[in-house]
Image (cartoon, rainbow, N blue to C red; front, side, top):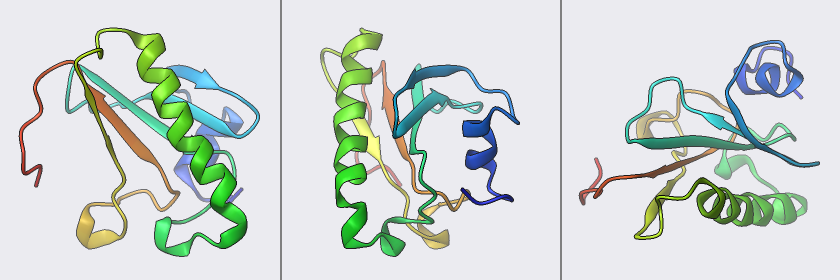
Length: 115
């Protein structure tokens, strides 16, 4: 974990969050500025700055992030008609916290293109 990372502090409980899921490798919580009726942030407990910074030994945890997203969507309910999973990679793509994370968005019809 990185000492100055917002998400690492959330994982450690130093910053409060509305947790919706946790296992040995993954932590998920409600976004504090939701962009849809359902907006969950899903993060690995291992600090990885972005998808661009991921290494081959991160492949398993990255796969678990995807599987956790599907599990969370099923547990939340109301997403049977679909949801969106978003990863912003880098500043120009809108990444503001440099700890890899996915946004699980749903609960309404989501337009395209998104940005």
